[in-house]
Image (cartoon, rainbow, N blue to C red; front, side, top):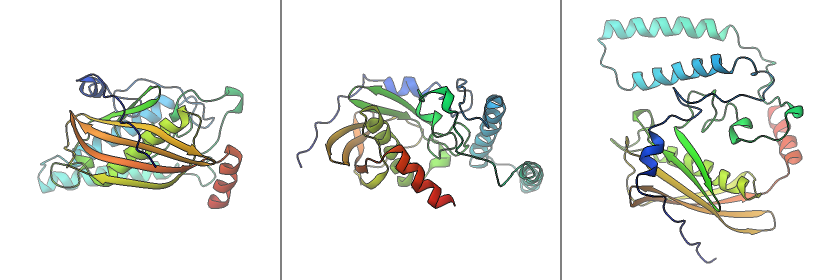
Length: 247
């Protein structure tokens, strides 16, 4: 298969400028209303809770508190966790939808608790997304909670980011579907605390198979190249597959 021409790079400094303002799923980010019937009316409170946990994750990775104070923090947080766990109900519908609200206008409306971009998941990656037809961009500045080799972003985190930016490219071109295969080529270490730009573009579509290609850059240096195979599946089929898994 012929290679796809790499997408044009955004103007120099775009990633750094975008990363300075937090996204919807990061502390201090803008408010985004939810269409989830079990979330509507408590978006701000859930965001505040998730943001506080994100701050705790970052602080846990960077603090130098003495042992006695660390133990005190751990006990206080354990108490909070126990109180919060008392509100976990087995019948809570994580996948409820408000059909009267119409089609979603933001990927996060479909993925409220998604590991990569969910606004109510404190593990969500610090990705900001942008669509410039026919290219999808994600901008990120990964901090120490995402560390792999010393001073570098973990390879699994980069793979997750690629899967997401590929998904955006696919959805925006009307060719969405679950990941069948994701191939990552790590050319150079991707550093922490530096703006990183991910780019993705649908390379080809044959029947239900979609090939999407992309790369990651730190400034002008390409650090990672990736390719994904995706299988186009109807929303009805996806719902059936999900019900079999969770039943």
